[in-house]
Image 1 (spheres, rainbow, N blue to C red):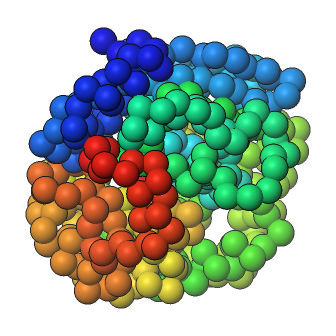
Image 2: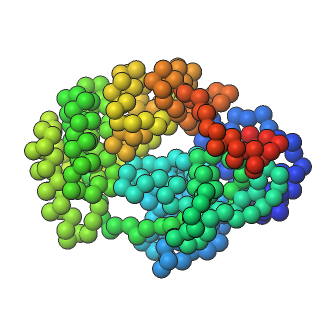
Image 3: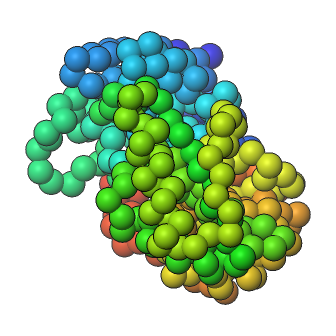
Length: 348
């Protein structure tokens, strides 16, 4: 079992090709014909400074362990990594997979301060740092977010963390059409209310807009009432409901059943056309329509739909040779970084 950086260096030097694997929570990412470098044994919190709001952790550490340690101090990872019960923290960063709570403060790239890595030649080094204010220049640690382990192997990660709020309230607004829900999301995003999350859920008829507010027990009820009145006046929903039990409401992957599951990156202006093409698939749009999750029967069909709409997706569950769906990615900078960090093309 891989337990430290030296083990990783030895593995890299011993293999002509290899594939990095965390805890295997996203099976579509690991259908690669190459020896697997299993990082699930590379675990543990290295350094946690609650008063400094920084956390350094080994890449194979279970995500639920990281979140539990932060929760004990009233803190959390604002980019809301998904699959907390089965994923590793390194896998969450490598896949750039975030949930609905990313809406307020941003994604993983905004909270990764530094990383220790082993590159494709077996060389180990540290990029970034543990300080919130970092030096200017090309930030390799942030570049590795969403890299799928194909540029360098992350062994440790340092994050900026935030204090969490003590209480939440969620509201459901129903609209007669998806277009109306999307227009309402524009109004909510531009309002004075700071939302913790804002999701759009299409239905067989119409659509729902799910909103979440956080705050203190003494002031939250008044904010919720003011928010509800604002939405009712500004967007005229068919129905308004305050959710009493929101425990499962913000698991944005819940209910997305099917052989294939993918994350899709889009802009809100692309949502209506895409959704019309996805009719029949289970889907949910997070971040006010800037991201989506789609469950369907056929990954090839979804690949074609995304390509025709000029969009890209990442397959998390399903059987295809390549998990990258839709429009081919052409990135000159990424190619240069790959040539520098992995000149022999070992990391696949």
